[in-house]
Length: 108
Image (cartoon, rainbow, N blue to C red; front, side, top):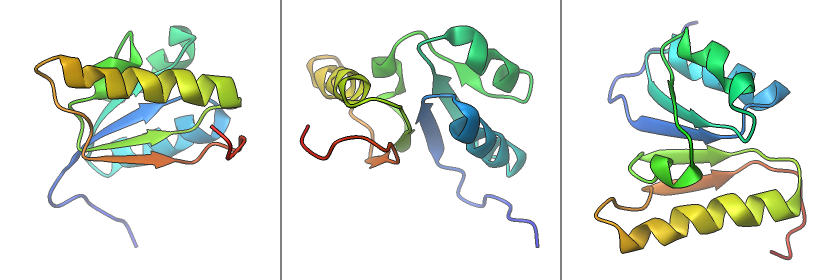
């Protein structure tokens, strides 16, 4: 069975490592609007060929309906989520939903 997006929420992905890259690809294949930030931009660029928007900073995902985070270190998680929270000082709203799938400390 193939899933096809009906409401097409705008989705952001923070991180384009091995697993997150594959998940972003599945979202694109299902017709979702996906924007991706990765510290090493070159790792995210192949997703642009599949329709993703590649952004230069985490706060540029603040307008997305849902942002999935998948990073590899606690410090990285703190940096990217702080960047999203700071977006409240701009006219761009924060993401509607922030989903963290990182395997890091719960003490942030």
